[in-house]
Amino acid sequence: MSVAFLVIYEGQPEDPELFLRYYVEKHVPLVWKFPKIRRIEIDRGVDGGDFFMITRLTFDTMEDLRVAIHSKEREHARADMKKFPPFNGIVRRQAMEIMDMPREAN
View 1 (tube, rainbow, N blue to C red):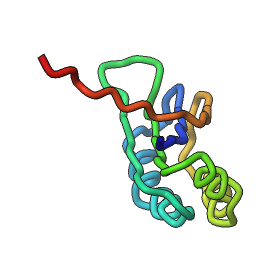
View 2: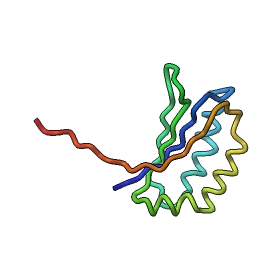
View 3: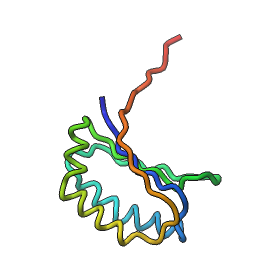
View 4: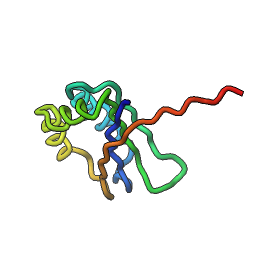
């Protein structure tokens, strides 16, 4: 069973393109340094809605996720958040179990 750590950006940045560019070019490379991280996905909201984006960090196990979120590498990434371009909204974080659903053969 793999797990994900979701970072949910509910609201909008003052300058969406500037925010996304900083996030991808500066912040994501710091997140890639987390121990045990397997994948990073960014889902960007389109066509209105409540969420600007959702970042999914994937790990093999819950223990791997715990190691990452208690690491010095995460502390560096958290410090970088103070440099983000202005964001108007709430940032939520949630650990999730990933349940793969195979397609039934018919």
